[in-house]
Length: 179
Image (cartoon, rainbow, N blue to C red):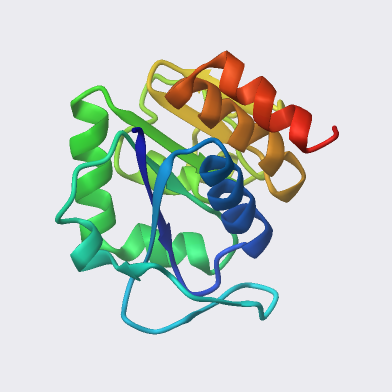
């Protein structure tokens, strides 16, 4: 069974976090949501999320993919967390999937993972740090998958499903969503 880590930082974008977790679980993916501390996560619009575990416990396991929800200041908190940065670099170096949406691709950029890669993000986020981004819903470049924001979260999650468990499973989940 494919496994995914979704780190949840205070101030994350709840629509993205919930969409990613929900759709991956519908596809039968083993998803672990992990808070950066042991507190409940208050997302960017005030929704309180209860992570499955804390990041230190979660990082004891291996994953097929790590997915970063965006939102501010959530993406800034992810970027400032050395544990997240180290795991991202390790997974990218090993050819495993790393994915980020909205403002979170800036974490990939600041770790060097986006060097010479195509990506997308919330408008202006990567431009502000000198990384060119594409204005499309989802961009895949090797083992790096990025997306633009809350409005593209479903397309992003469906792309992740296809990469992890195949096109048939993606179509099955998508059909159940009545898109």
